[in-house]
Image (cartoon, rainbow, N blue to C red; front, top):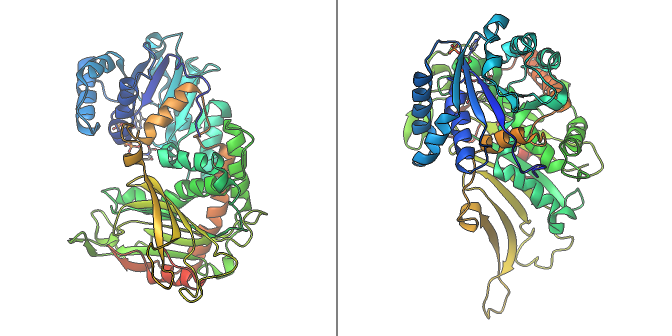
Length: 489
Ligand code: NDP
């Protein structure tokens, strides 16, 4: 999807707010190192780490080195690491104190584009914007990257977006959904629009239904308090799964410009049929994991995790049938499923095609197995097509077998390293290309649709259905899809 408009990356001052936080250490600093290693950072690009604690430049460099040693998967290239370290600069201030920003101007390069990454709680995005403005640090080409979550419902997302909009225009704002930076998600667009095989077969005449699954093996990972406020619907469906769904379902954009793509995505979000509030559990399932076994080990239930409140009704699993009310997708359900403590970590899109109009092999199959296109997002990134083939041989009756054309990314592109999503996203931001970032109307449209479901769940007063850790969710999820004569992959 991301065509670099300008392959010559300009020099940037990458100002990393919350530079010692979890996200910065685990993802952002390693991603900048990888971009440096790939020769994609301008020689004058610098990383200005900002945090509250006073720290010497040496201590900051030491802390970044430690983060790289821990979180860069392969052995560090010492020449690159040395070059990278020379780009670092540390600045201490409270992010809500305009006076604290006074010295920042002096360390910024007037010839560089200022890219601010807010790796902080969203509640202080507005305060940081204010500090930057008060100190005359926002220019026309200044950019800001915002992390999710943008609010926990439509109203709170508007508050955050309004606060940021006081200081930055929409064309300066880069809202992250890291799924959009994944190679396989970008490949989805290439697959759809660079192959006539698919582009001409991508609607309700040929496709029966689509399944999108994002399954996590992990539980809460010590973030019980944060997660319990959100739940799986806000944490995964509102952003990642709806973004993937809109890329699968969108009409062809006129070109690959950011707004052309985002215009098409938002049309899909506007066409999502509101789920029937009076019968909310007909097409939605909420689940919560109980203690169980995963990969041979016993794991605690959600309510037994460290820091848990035992009366929480928060969902750790969601399954739903989604209908898209437009010309292309009328009658084609999209089944979404996402949960924690599933048997494996596994994210994929499966497009189920319709059966051929007439079955010539009735003696062998009452219903021929349908073609399936599977796009594996993680792990084992790749694309697989299931089709029917004749088994070779001189048998008197023809034998058929389902076979798979399997394109594994790691086997096919052996010499290409699969970049982490954040590498692609940081690069695109430095290039000034917003195609892989979420526009305000997309966020708000997604919240509008999700809010009605969240409100109906709350009004129903029904607790989530239990499922044992290590299973594929509550039986109600299977019942929902079986009712439609279909089955989860
Ligand atoms: P952390 O709490 O680990 O880091 C936040 C950093 O911001 C801390 O270093 C904190 O400093 C600093 N900070 C907060 N308030 C101020 C302030 N007023 N002045 C100066 N510094 C301040 O959070 P994460 O790194 O985990 O997350 C950052 C953002 O990214 C959040 O919005 C989160 O929701 C989002 N996110 C995180 C993901 C992750 O994997 N971690 C994944 C997806 C999104 P101090 O330590 O001094 O308090």
